[in-house]
Image (cartoon, rainbow, N blue to C red; front, side, top):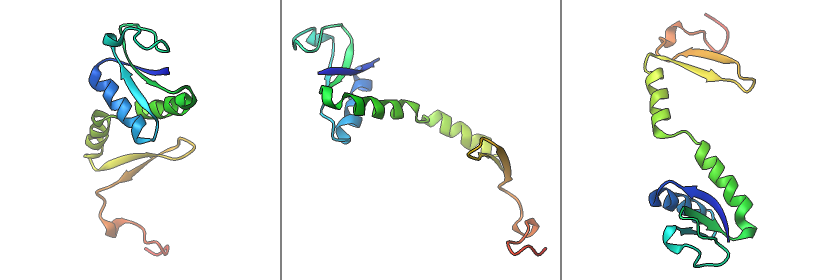
Length: 115
């Protein structure tokens, strides 16, 4: 068994375990109360999510993706920024464009190039 995540709380560990098991990875939560009861997992006093060694790389990749996903506060902040009727979009080359989301459609250029 290989530790792939050190959790701040039992709830945090359970969320990661559920993420991994949902992806078909056999994951277990070991906390301070296991303190070395399983020889492959040393007792550290920490809450750890562990997986089989063969699944460790895939588990770590899923956890990285999960940790880098925007949280609800970031999504809400972006929505509030857009509430003024504009939105900044990033193109693949990181060039920003601003769109007026509240523009009158009659004021926009038509798709066929006529005014």
